[in-house]
Image (tube, rainbow, N blue to C red; front, side):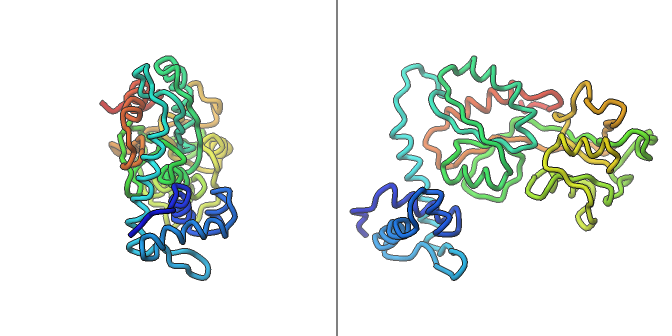
Length: 305
């Protein structure tokens, strides 16, 4: 096997195809023509002596040998990125560019209380923030576009390290004047699955709420793209929902329209964690970030100690 002539760009094309499952989309993401990308991938395959991808009519499949190559390719790209990071004489692990992803149900409630302490502690940090859904953010993490992601476990993807930041209990949000509002004590068994107001598909919080409420088989008329819109829908009388305690506002902007209750079952909630690639060449920066995130957990969270 001879890798002479294979470049880091060729290796990045292999990772891009694995990420997007399609040569055309991978070429668009890499800002090159599809023929150029295909030539680069073929160069790597020819050097290895076997196929990384199985070219099907509508999508690209990864061969068993190719799966191992892709993991190594990501590690090669991580190492190359680390080599090009300028040496930092300040001793600050969080210096220079750092791309941080955050899922949409955590970012708006965690970041406002984090950014000033983060800037004060690490003035040379060039932070880039990206919000999105778990699957997309984890994909960009694995592709090297993000350095770390704030999310809610579990995730199915391999090659990712998780460090729990805090736990956030779930609160039941109900319309004032509803049957539920008149009850002194509410349990999961008191909730009608058909009345659940949920986030759109793709939000991990949707799946967590479905599991708790047993609403998987029910047809849901009301869905929202954000927690704030979800709260408005409950205030309008559409039904009830579960939201993280960190998203409860004091005072509530929908005062006299909604109420919050704690379910009688103990321990209902979710963990929030920082995720990064196992292959990451340096971990002092993510370790420092985990420490700061834990120290500045938002109101309503139970910090990890």
